Image 1 (tube, rainbow, N blue to C red):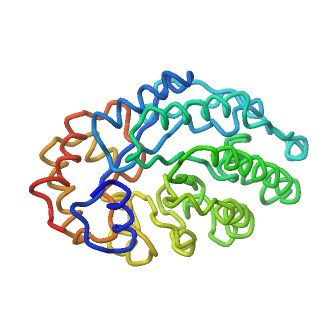
Image 2 (cartoon, helix red, strand yellow):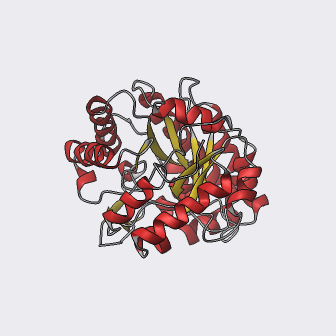
Length: 331
């Protein structure tokens, strides 16, 4: 059974030869040059052979060309520190300008995507990570100021979100030129820790739906990712996407509850911090097999709920990969 067959049967709740497995990380430094970024991604895929490759550029890649400035300062999750925001006043949302996706940072990431797809065998499904317009807005102005603008001058913020949505759709249009399996749509602010769900549904969710509803039908594997605690899970559950990724180890919903609310598969089961970074191969193997047993090898992709820390022991990744092979739950 090849990777695509395994994943499609998993989404449908049908028996498979084994549980699909995947993990991903940022690549600070290497992601600043297309050829180097593509090389580490291809090497990573060839070394661990996950069932799909999720390309995770710097978290600001979709907005850097608006003038945002950032730098990697050693964060273990590989994220970059924003040193200059673009939007200081609410009026600045109305002054953003349309960007050309083939230039700048976005153009570089698309070059890397092309090189990855050329360098991998046809059996490997590739997903490109894409932050939501509301996530992009938070990067452009900072989260506290974004929430203030949302409540004090929503009409100006809406102008900015409309432009960011249009820019995101242009990126999607460019990516249609490549044989992607789909995107991993990052909803980094859809959390009950930040906002009431009604606020998010009013301000941000219409733009999320505009992106998700416009994805090409040829992309057979689109996934929502909640890299947050207390995700607004009901929003994703209504999309009928093949898979949802969240950290079931750090809060609600738990693995079985979350999977029961989904149309497709739960992409979860392990903590990037507690188990994959801080644990041992034995603890990773035991926890991974327990998650597979819990789900009975149905509608489940074994994965961390967030990107790997850059100092994650490779032995723990090998143990995670081993857990779905001999000795794991049967089909």
